[in-house]
Amino acid sequence: MKKNAVKIAMYLNYFVFAILLNSVGIVILKSQANYGVDELQASILEAFKDLPIAIVSFLIASFLPRIGYKRAMLIGLALVSVACVNMYFGNSFDTAKILFATVGVSFALIKVSVYSLIGTVTENQKEHNSLMSSIEGVFMIGIALAYFLFPAFNSDINPDSWLNVYWLLAGISLISFGFLFFTKFENQTEIPGVNLVDDFAQMFKLFAQLLTIVFVISAFLFVMIEQGIMSWLPTFNSKVLHLPQNISIMMASILAITLATGRLLAGVITKKINWIWVLSFCIVMAMLIVVFLLPKTVGLEVKEINSLSDIPLIGFAFPLVGLFIAPIYPLLNSVVLSALPKKLHSSMTGLIVVFSALGGTLGSRIIGYLFKNEGPENAFFYTLIPMSLLLVSFFILKKLTSKI
Image 1 (cartoon, rainbow, N blue to C red):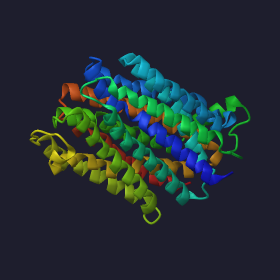
Image 2: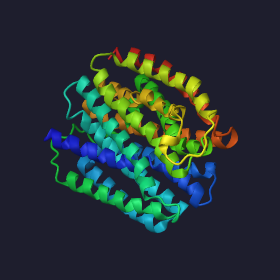
Image 3: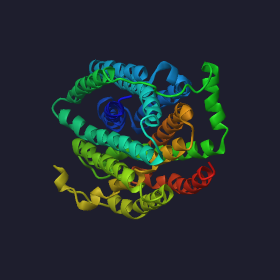
Image 4: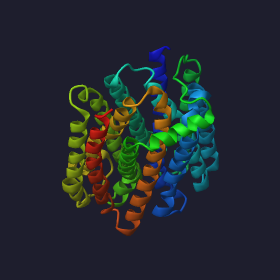
């Protein structure tokens, strides 16, 4: 296997889907402005994205090695290319639902394939931790780029101008398709079972283990926090800080940049410091930001804003939470996958994706509900609840993995 070429293919595919998946917060904001839906209605886009990820991952993850990781990723890239073009011509809330449903199905194929391939191109847990964190870091870079791509195509004169970005996204998807098509994959992984029924049973056997139960709950809680904040930060910036739409979207990129930085740094730090202490420090710092910095951001009196430079420094404080929550997801995934035989990585990845998708959907819906009923200035304070539960889960996972 040409490991470097495979790694580049994984990076490129994750980069493409980072832009597509995490444009949901931007499209939520645009849907309220262009398609006449309220906050709770707009939040359904998260479900159209995440539920297909959960369903498809559950159905295909255990026997994806039989389909072939390369073929699965090619199918995903082809589907989203078509969906992007359809979004341009459809220009409606219903078309946005179709777009994110397609992106969800495709990402299930991509993520299960990428996570399963990591184990075949790394030799030990440290390499696994490093590559996992780097790939997730590139994912966050793609997210950050999305917050600048969409405003670049937006215009106050033409409310439909932002749709032109989907031609670019379709083109990037096709470029990634071409690179992947010519990348050689060999000896991907061992087939988990003797037949498809046995493959599917592997996932249920994994779910019967206490380690798996605690882990998927942890993944669920983390994605609930991350997606809840990420999807609603543009709306928070618009309604609480009273920023113009373009600036609200660009401000949200700070969260993605801090997430990318945190994940790339985690790949280096965990080579020297045990993961349990890294994650414990990170979640405590994230909680302190919510407790002490978020109230100051909410209470900020913003005057006329025409550019990012017009925003007071405290306005940039809350998105720094991304720097500390960033390492949690890739390190949790790496710790658990490294503790399992490689033939079970696809099945475990299926569970990871399923519960991550459910956590993202529930997180966005809860924050959407809180935005509407508790006010946008109060919604993010409720993330302290899943953060506290996560801190407890880290030490339980540490104890369980140390026995393996």
